Image (cartoon, rainbow, N blue to C red; front, side, top):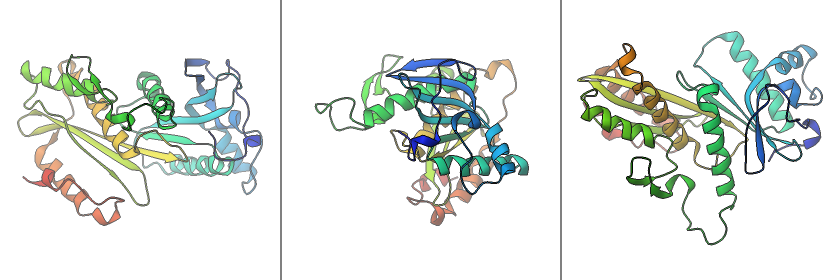
Length: 286
């Protein structure tokens, strides 16, 4: 559901943008729509130049009601960047989406991409949001979507809605095949008081050298169905798994364990900036 006045938002036909990517649970997912396709008119407080800049900005995926075309939320994938112009364009887009009440999820990752990973992640969000809204009915055990236990693809029992479950299983297989120095995907998640949720995941590929992925989530007016920081960690594990599948096709970019420990300690030292403190002191031990 949108958080603002629906009169600001256009209804989206099924053929808009690059077309429908998938349909699920009464919703359809469109690809490649511009912000200008979603918002009927310029919100107050924006100059014509700002509106033109924002209107050209694209969302990777937009979730709409299948029957009415009403916009539910948008998702965008971005690589980490310090480019001033790109950050300015993001801020203007954020101002427009805030003015019209459009929920947006921005996923910042070096590895996760809209085409390869977007449909699966958006499907997950649709299911998690429906579950959190009570779609399972009153008889469902009071357990969070992420904590539902069932049979995993490898036959084990575990959290079936852990997006990193397959990566964790693949790490064990890679260790048995002597392609990893350690079978365990480790990770953490935090939420900055004045910023995004952030998830880390890593595995030791060679003694003293780790494959590290970091994912940040900016949730603007969007409920993800699970806690955003926990989702960020699962997405980081998903990204590690993606890179593990290409270990043999090239030299992976690894980080020395000593450098990783320094980064963890630097994060620990900023614990006062976190919403729920820092719960990973044990990971900072050399």
